[in-house]
Length: 276
Image (cartoon, rainbow, N blue to C red; front, side):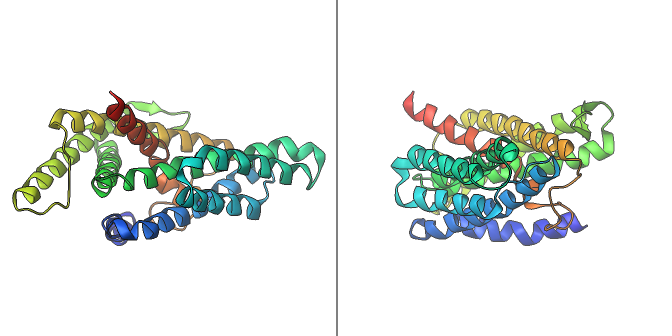
């Protein structure tokens, strides 16, 4: 029940930010940056449990600088990311004990990549001509897959998917997750078509239906990989959840782990599709 109630509060807020409109894109970007900071802080907590001591304030400042720089100078994204990585290395090199430099710098820079650079793709998607539709598609496919996997896995799950990483996940749940994502994608496409038939250009999916269904499968698989990857990080740190901010869901990092892989996959799929 906590899981459901938390979702009922968060989902409308997220969709409101997604569909604010182009001139309010900065508010969406600010929201994504805030999520990145919260998730990054939880990641740093995991890193400390395995012996690293990353400079928390420096990493948070780097995450904010990455989003601010991307907003002002999107063409300089790689240069900004590289400069911030070097800055974090410098901070780690001149603080604390010398034997901690490798672990501290690795944890700090990986946090900037794993959470900061990956979530920037959400902003990239949102800035496209049909950006809100793309982001809504991503969220609906990931959320539907996650929810379907949870309930099908609890009801009929027998064969473990990756017991060493996440003992609760099953092959039955994974297959159900793909089916749930496909169903959500199809329903969203139908909703978009109905709205456009009434001259309401809220959702725009110009390509053929098969393209979006193929993307739904790709996004779902990426989301499941992202979920398992974060489970591996938590297991290595000896914890069940990255935090406790979201009742029924654990921490912020627990809630966005699938998006950290799924969002870049959708972005790169769109880039490749435009090129070819």
